[in-house]
Amino acid sequence: MSANTIRLNQAMSHFDGHDTLWLFGYGSLIYKADFPFLERKPARIHNWSRRFWQGSHDHRGTPEQPGRVVTLIAAPGKVCEGMAYLITPEEFAHLDFREKNGYLRVLTDIEFRGGGCAQGVAYVADQNNSAFLGPASELEIARHIVRSEGPSGKNSDYLLQLAEALRGLDEVDEHVFAIERHLLELTASPL
Image 1 (cartoon, rainbow, N blue to C red):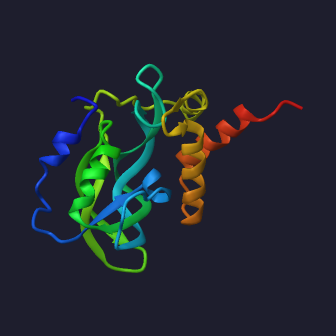
Image 2: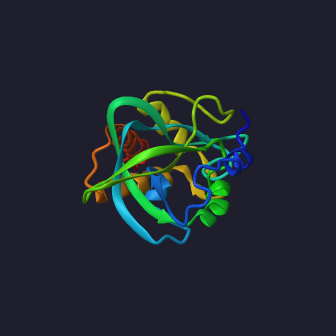
């Protein structure tokens, strides 16, 4: 599958006729909501894990030197914490462009921290897209991130902002935090 998924996402019709729907963010959507929303709530989804396995050719890297950003990987029994946004379907035009580098809209059940749940959408980049980089050790991922930069800035900024946003949610994500620790060691000034 091509990394550009705009047309594939525009063909999704599950929420046609809905005035509003919930969007689940687990990466930069937690801390960078650059779209109008009606409501925002901490939330979680089940049976998924957040992983730095997706390449970023358009935001945190380039086609020649892709950065690494998070995607969701099926993980039975696991829980992924994030942020849910109540949006109107018109916001998909912006979101499909923002998430065009391999991400497809996936229907998911969203559980709100304060109680309640709803069906909504998350953008997931699976191993079938051409930008998928796949698993690597947290140290290898940190080494990759430290040398990557794209139109949206340094890949390391993405990692550090995500780690901070997860702390703001009182979420412990060992994968993200281990990469952050390695990155901080790699960038520490020598004494």
